[in-house]
Image (cartoon, rainbow, N blue to C red):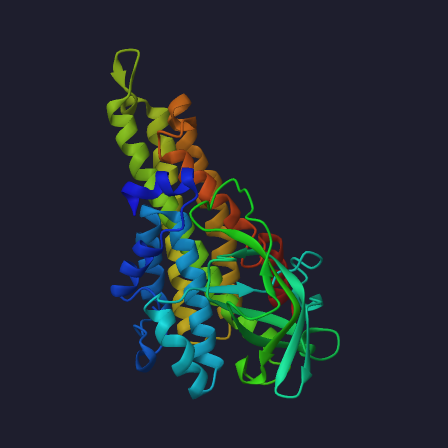
Length: 357
């Protein structure tokens, strides 16, 4: 991915063929069970994979991580018929998936979502819209959180909507600061009839499914930040060795040496937090939600501000040029503080768990 990431960014190309090559390596369903085509790997394995892939292209890897989260949700909460229908083509990336939770009027307040699904016979009729959907318009399978019951989280269900369903449409392709190798659009439902058989889990279980998915999604996106930061440290090392000022390589500057040391230390600290959270989630430990929230909060902020952005600064004017990859890692990692639950929500979750009786 690394040789192509600049072109994908500049031309806003969705690299379908490359992602399908990733699927041939088992990256289409990393933590999906093997009987439906998944790799059956652990959350720790997944974190290592996403860090490595994100050094090549952070934006594309982030989409792959969302696709994996959707596949896992169907694998974990779907019945056998649903698992065997939807998961195999997701694991090969013959089909791509998008996660549809956020709405125009309820970003961080996901439990207040308004997209409705009213049952008529053997179908649900969906009406409403979802905002900022990665893969919107390009994905084939949309894992949609919608309201089948009353207000609050217990009225939310999870329904799979397939591309081509009458009543499903998409907004304009958004112009973004980063993440340009994946399209972002609104997903719109207008009297969209979906079989009841496409509901994942029971009615009212959707919010639980969404939150369970996001626990892993937070580790995944933090691992993408880790990959961007890792690549930025390597680029900075190389730049300091070859760039000269006042007749000597920048690497001889003690100030810059100390800056690089701080960056590398924060990289390792972020990695350890993410790996610890990944193990806790895999083991279903009681503190898993808190650790996932902490890892996402710490890694996405440190990797962006103290590593990627600092790497750009240490490149000087060159860092601001699109000929240099360091600026793309910075742009692609900025949004990680907003999605999969904003970092403000992470702070709320952490403090709530610390203060509960």
